[in-house]
Structures are given as structure tokens and as C-alpha cells.
Image (tube, rainbow, N blue to C red; front, side, top):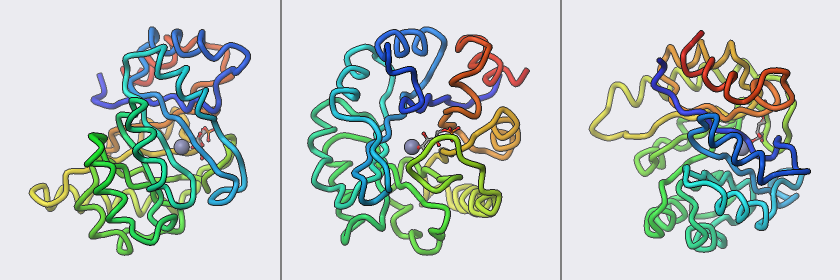
Length: 222
Ligand code: DX5
Ligand code: ZN
């Protein structure tokens, strides 16, 4: 059994019956529900709305992570914290004071997630990583499902794993990958220490197998 967490990317769910999707995924063994919030400015798209978030929150006791792909994310930290978010990911480029955003997330009682775009270096966020509980490594450019995995990001994953392994007293973040995560990527990345996998159209939604079969297969490494 792999010690990993599977995080359905709910923007890929069947919105004609979101409630049933949440219940089915919860029963199928989903660990964390990944909720993409977009403002059309930080990313050229719109993801899920507050009502979608609230419906999911009301339908499951599992963890919810909110991926804020928005400018000036500090504005909405209290709102999502009050509405029961467990992990809040933000993009450091989106706020003039990213360390202050991290502090605010922690102050609100949520886990701190730093989201790194494909073109954002580890070096540029080294200090922020000291404040992170999770690092979301974007393996596609953010904002859209159904894209191709960007292999050049693999070296960043290796670098983050090295940092965490070599300085466990300073860095305590878990790595999450988000974007075009296929069954093969779950296998290869879980073997090197990636803990959490955002699953969208590449591994979970729109497949012929049901959610239970897929999530069990990914957990068992069958
Ligand atoms: C990307 C989104 C994810 C993910 C979707 O910004 O955060 O929802 O890419 O999964 P795929 O890429 O497999 O469709
Ligand atoms: Zn996301």
C-alpha cells in the first residue's frame, strides 16, 4: 500500500450532479478534495465558485484544499478559513507580501500551501518554504485541465525532495503535484517521495473504471 494521498481535482467533476460526485469520491477513498479557485487575472480562466466550494464542504468530512489561482490572495484567506478550508495554497507571485499571506493562513488555523508555477524556481521561494506545510508543484501551467505534463518540472521536484530530506529540522513540507498526473506519474513520483497527487482528467475523471477501482489501484500500486 502506498503512503500517499489522492486529491480529486473537483473542477474536473461532473457538474450536472456535483453532490453525487462528492459522495461517490468520498466513499471511493478520496483523501483531500482539491478546489481550484480562479479570478481570470492570475490565470486566464475561471474555476469553481464559492457555492461549489460550500456544496463540497457540506457533503464531506474529508480535507478540502483550496488552490487560490488569484491575485492578492490575502483578501480571501479569512473567508475560506471561516468556510472550513483545511489547506490553502497560494502563488507567491500573486501577492506583494507572500510571507505575510503564509502567516495569515496559519493564523486562521489552516495549513499553509505554497503553489509553484512551472517557471518559478525553488531558489526564489527558499525562505517561504520554511513556512510551508505543503508545496504544490504545478506540473502544467495553472488554470486548465487536460494539458500535457511539463517534464522540465521534474528537476524541481527532485530539488524539493533533497531540501526536505537534508534539513528535516528546518523544512517540514509535504510535496503535492498538480497537473496532468497520470497513473504512471503516480507510480514514479510516489517512489521518490511525493506524498499528495491532484487527480483530474489524466487519471480519474472520464475513465471507464469507477472511482473506487481507480483510487484503490493507485493506492495499492497495482
Ligand atoms: C490545473 C488544475 C488541475 C489539474 C487537472 O490548474 O489545478 O485541476 O490540472 O487535472 P488534469 O491535468 O489531469 O486534467
Ligand atoms: Zn489546482
